[in-house]
Length: 76
Image 1 (cartoon, rainbow, N blue to C red):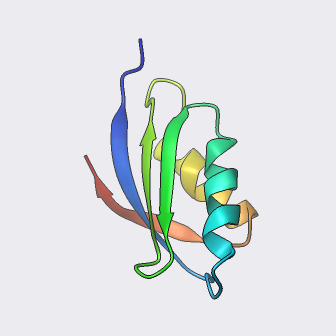
Image 2 (image 1 turned 60 degrees about the vertical axis):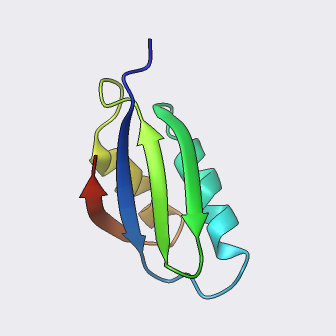
């Protein structure tokens, strides 16, 4: 059973409409991620993940490795 937790990541380096797709794909490769929505206009990603399988640091590492550094904006 998924013990979902949500977080918002504030992103940098997004400068075109294709960037959110790259960020979403990078986040979805983290095995604990249930969903990821990326908004270009706000430069934020809303991520739902299983905290028993991955730490928030894995999410920020995934975006950074995809050339879009992020930091945690809000945890729910």
